[in-house]
Length: 472
Image 1 (tube, rainbow, N blue to C red):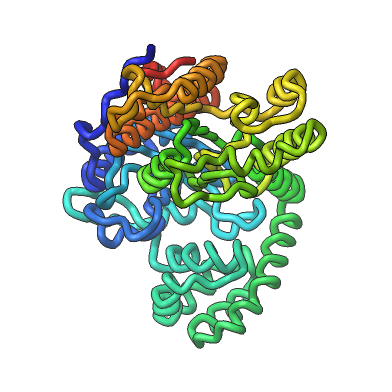
Image 2: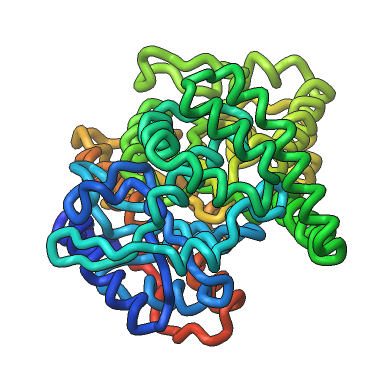
């Protein structure tokens, strides 16, 4: 029987200032020339953005990742790379109360669809030193930072981000000629002057009308000045975007099983805020959308909804099974953003684990056959109410039927590649913390394997230990 996991409450998380104080010198030791793009005004104690953006030389990505991994006390729980940016999700940094992770982005190309709108080399050459507490680092010039802050939403997304606009407007108003000079090489004098005039004049309609001409100009200039490079950059951009948006490799999934539907829901709801910034998106699926979410989960279970669906006969049961199968595969390929972590507590697996209790009327052999084609999860967590014996957390003996069902769930999860069985008779907070440990360990190990495969020069020092209580 797996040993209980140690709760992470004894762990000390790095503050933002401690993290930055370790990361900046590590980047310097690796010889990475970098600048922090924005949201650094309250460093080192506060990050004004949702992540930290570093602009680096295109050749410095491997060294940047090595520097990040060298920071003691942190674990990289996710890594996603596009043609212009690498996203790293770092657990072990508490930048605000209740937050345990931080997203760190390394950018080497400021672009629209693969076409650069500001050369990285020029930004790094013009970067200015800044001191914040005991930190010394580089930031872009005022003009470059204003352009980056404006184009991050305007050129890329076609909308205006109000958070940065006042500072952009002030910078353009103070040095309009400098802004036009910085924009002209990629957009031409006419388009650059038109945009600067619209920004300084606070004409948002005119600013938005600049988007299409700016995009067309930067694309045409790039293709005319370097057609081979321009076409290759565009092809690489779209290839990476398709891979990120439609590949199941960018989804990491955790399925939580147990007899108590309300208990699963409570633990998933408790895990969701703890896991923020451990991945780009943290999604939850508490139950199948066709099932009622009961008010009294101790007396009513999701099987009632499933029985209503599957008790009509063998053919409806088999049809529902195939429908669940198709929907599961569709969800793996669609509807995700970059790196997505999905926590599932829904019941589509239950009829295959315990067909007798869930009113499954199809052929049992057919159910087992269909269940083989369901996409597996990266981690299975079983909430075992009788792990310490035959009693629930209320001290009452579990009925024979509940023990039979638990044994069916145990047998099911033990067939999976990676699983953990948690003692659900413990206090709910402790169970949630133990589930958090198991999930973080799984994410860190996957990310570590991915990084070693992507960067062959990385030292094999992180993520090699198996989490206690986890079987693979």
